[in-house]
Length: 188
Image 1 (cartoon, rainbow, N blue to C red):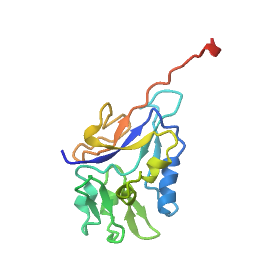
Image 2 (tube, rainbow, N blue to C red; image 1 turned 120 degrees about the vertical axis):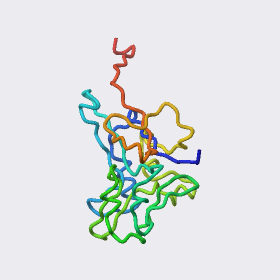
Image 3 (cartoon, rainbow, N blue to C red; image 1 turned 90 degrees about the horizontal axis):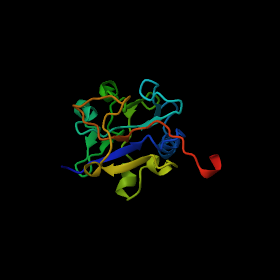
């Protein structure tokens, strides 16, 4: 199996603080209304508990990325060495094919600069031996980068996450569980 870096979203740890999304926005200074990473609250049908649970979502760096397949100028390229799907905005001709065809809505429409944009997993940071901004910014360590071949006890398609098997998204999830009441000696 080729090396594939992936986001690991631990919904048991996520506190819904949006630090991941804000760290990404601060790193890349995205236009107002453009966010490469979003925090998605789980709906009651997927997580029927009073407490909230979230998925931190960005590009899934799919095995067969539709963005790379439909881009006429190769502005989207899947790197051989680590499986990251990199978007080069300087090559983008704003045909919007990636925006219209990605079922995960990872490609974003920057109408101000008239180009598509998306998460490239902070390739410049990874190449320098650093963590992506979103991972570094998560105070609960709910978002990490993993080598997909080493992942155990994670789910590829949890409830509330689209199942597009032909793309084979690399993002993995630790699903949120019903909250448990933990009593200490003080509580008894």
